[in-house]
Length: 290
Image (cartoon, rainbow, N blue to C red; front, side, top):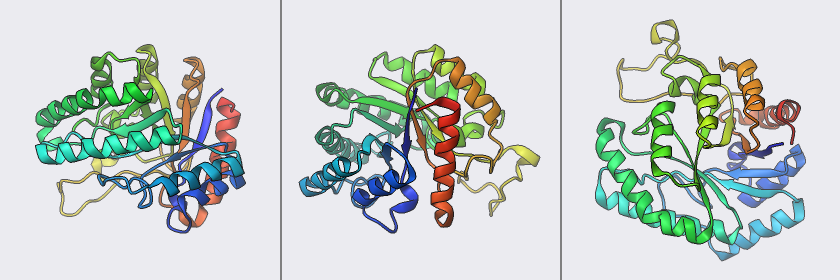
C-alpha cells in the first residue's frame, strides 16, 4: 500500500492553499503534497506562511479528512554564492518550523545549485545539509531528494550517490517519472533506476506524470532557440501523454515492494486538471493500491 498524494499546483491560481485540500477531497485524494506557491513557500523565497495560515490549513485538514502528507520546497541551498546559500538555509529553517507545526514529517526537495559550476555547488550542498542536519533531527523530519533538470546534478546515478554518501537514515531519494529521460540522459531505463534506489534502501517517494524523451529524434523533440541556449525543457503531462514506460514503472514498483509516497504532479493542463488528476488517482489505486 502507498500514500497517494495530489500536488495541487494547477489549482493555486484559482483558490487558496487551504481550499486545495477541499478540492483534493472532492477528487477522492486523502493526501496532498504542497509544492511552491505564494501563500506558503515560493521558489527560493522565505516562506510567507504565518500562524493564521497554519491554523487555516489545520482546519482544512480536520474538515476534509485530507492530510498534508509532504511539502515540496525549492530553495537554492547549493548556490555557489555564499550569501545566497546562507539566505536559503534561513529559508529552510523557517520551512522546517512550519512543517513541524503542521505535523508533516516528510519533505521532498531538489539539489538546485548551478549545473555550470557543479563542483562548487556540490560543496555548498554538503555544507547546507551539515548545517541543517540538527534541525531535521530535532524535528524528526525526513528529507527526500530528487535530481531535477538544470540542478547541479541531473542524473539518477549521481544523485543516488550523493544521497547515499550522507549515510543518514532520514535522508532518502525520490524517483521522478516525468524526469525519466533527464535522469538517464535519454536512455529511459526506469526499471533499472527504480531498482537501484530500492536496493540502496533509499526509495521513499515517486512523482507521477509523463514526459517526452528530449534526446529522441536527434534531440529535436523539443526545439529551443537559439540552438544551444542554456536552458532545460521538460513536461509534467498526464499519464499516457508522453514516452515514460509505465509498463515498466508500475510492475517494478510492485516488484521492489514500494510502500512510500506517490505524488501526482501533472502541470500545465489547468483546463483539464480535474479529469487528469482523477484519472491518475484511479490508475495508481489500481496499480499500487492505496
